[in-house]
Length: 383
Ligand code: PLP
Image 1 (tube, helix red, strand yellow):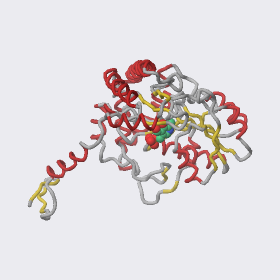
Image 2 (cartoon, rainbow, N blue to C red; image 1 turned 180 degrees about the vertical axis):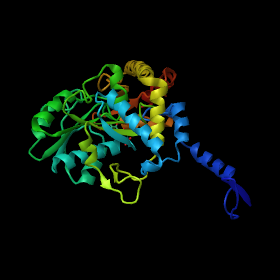
Image 3 (cartoon, helix red, strand yellow; image 1 turned 90 degrees about the horizontal axis):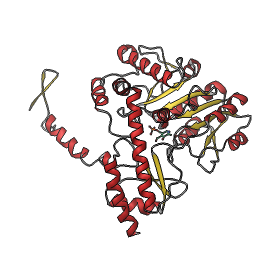
Image 4 (cartoon, rainbow, N blue to C red; image 1 turned 90 degrees about the vertical axis):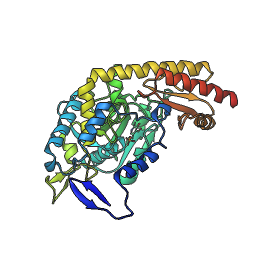
C-alpha cells in the first residue's frame, strides 16, 4: 500500500490505516464528547474561530527551544506586554503556561525561591491546584476561613501568617462561586510583613476588568504575580494560561540551565511548550480587542441574571448574588446533578454549602437557559 507524506511515496505495512480511515476513527471518538451547549460545569468554552485558525498556524512551534522559533517567541513577548499593560504594569514579565494550575505552581515556586521556605496562606476557597503546590514544593499550605459572602476572611489570614510564611494568595474569581477576595487588604498584610502576594485570577482575569473591578491587579502595590487564563474567558484554544510577574527577579528565580538548547536558561515548568496558546490568545485580543471581550462578558452577565431569576422562581436560593458569570443554587446537589445529567445537562456541585454550580460561559445563551430551566423543573418535580 502506498501513501503520500511530504511529497514522498511511503510504503506502509499492511496493518496500518490510510489517513482517511484514521481520521474517521478519530471522529468516532470525538463524537462521544459532550458539546459545550449542554455544559454549565466548565470554565472552558468553544474557542473563538480566529483562535482556532491561529492555533492551526502555530502547531509546529516549540517554545521550549525559543531560538528555533524566534517569531513565536517575539509574539509571546508582545502578548505578555499587552497583558502586563492591561493589568497595570508595563514592566510585567511572564510566559504562556498550560493553565491556572501551572501558573499557580510557578508563582509559589518563585515566591519560595525569592522569599525562603516555610508556609503559605490561601483562602479556603482556593482551587485544588494549591494541593499540588503543597505536594510538589513540600510546603505547608494553610487555609484561611471565608466570611459570610465566601470571600477570604482577612483577619484570619493575618492570624495564620507567622514568621515562616513567605506568601499569601488572593483569588479574583473563585472557582466555585466566582467570588472576589479583598486583594487590597491582603496587599496591606503582604507589604507590612514583607511577604509575597499572588493573585489567582485564572478565571476572573478576563471578567473582572470588564465589570469595573480595578483593585485586584498590579495597580495594587503588594501584588507580585497574577495567574490569568486565556483558555477560559479569553476564548483562546487549550492550553493557554498566563503567569505574569511584577518584576524580572521572580521569573529569573525559576531559571535552570539548558546546556543543549538555543537558549542558555529556561524558566518554564514544562520543557517542550506549545506556541498555539500564544497565537490563539493574541489573535483573540487583536481581533476582538478588550472592548469585544467586554461585550461578551456583559452578555454572559445578562444571561447569568436571567438564569438566577428563573431558578430562584423555582424555589432554589442562590448561594450569593452572582459577582461574575457563575451562579450556585442551594439544593440536594448530588441528586439534582445526577438527574440533570439524565436530561443531558452537566452542572457541578460545590464543597460548601450543598449547591449546584452553573458557569455561564459564552456558549450558554438565553435559549440554553430556557431549555435548562425546563429540565430543572422536571428534575425538581421528580425529587
Ligand atoms: N485557579 C482558578 C481560580 C480556577 O478556577 C482554575 C480552574 O478552573 C484553576 C486555577 C486551574 O486552571 P487549569 O485547570 O487551567 O489548570
